[in-house]
Length: 391
Image (cartoon, rainbow, N blue to C red; front, side):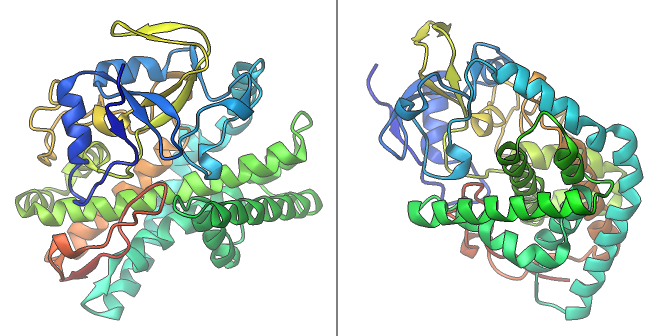
């Protein structure tokens, strides 16, 4: 099969998925592509197949020969995870260890705290006066405050780990990414040592006390949770506000009925066009067929969750924001055994943000034209660089 596209995709409009990705999706569900590093991979763009493959045990994050595996990029989060023979058992072990911290009861207990933090940050935003950068005043600090409390990370360290995660996830400078990885791991080891000396009721203390996890694994997992636990929510807050304000009839509907916020959050999670990569990376653990295409063991398969969330066969007129749309089928948090543990936390944060915004700032509007907003093109997760607003 010929190479259909070169990654990363060029996404200039933060409100829509990349035009080239849309073209590929219209041509079929499986495509041969080349990653940013020049490696070949399979890109799956069809919702039904992406959803099924997300829970297919024939695909994994490890590779029998990591040194020769195709890769999507140079960042820590593009790395091949080991080990190949123990992947399923390792994943089940870590999920069992972490699940209590993301249980429904713990999330319910955390909701009032998230709502209080949101209220405080919005008070600071309004105190600043319009225009104000909602990205800097709300989208960034709220997820950091929340994940710090959950993981047991001192918030006063946020400048340090925020800089390290930004470096580690930088897609345009391999040396910068490697430096960020080193800084993150060093910080992770420091936190483990602190938690062993003074344990608390938090995730990192639990990892530090676990007998079947080595320091390298615990430090790496802690930092991965720190990154994933705040960075993706930062992106969804910013893009969600932009989507609503760029569709004023949807904003007005939410202002008129804040009870629609949970449905609006699901539509925002579906519709947010973030990142320019092909999708979630997986490696074929054995030969398999995807829609008649033979994928060989060891091949890199990119599960295009962004394309899947914009599949017109499942979401009619997918580029249109519709807060009344049934969106239970979106795959933003994955599907099946690897469904994101932090999904309930992200939903709580997003619901708190949009409930507070529509009830306390009903006249909120963009302070600049949407097409002038800067998108973070060198960041793995994409998203906005700023979001000036008025009210």
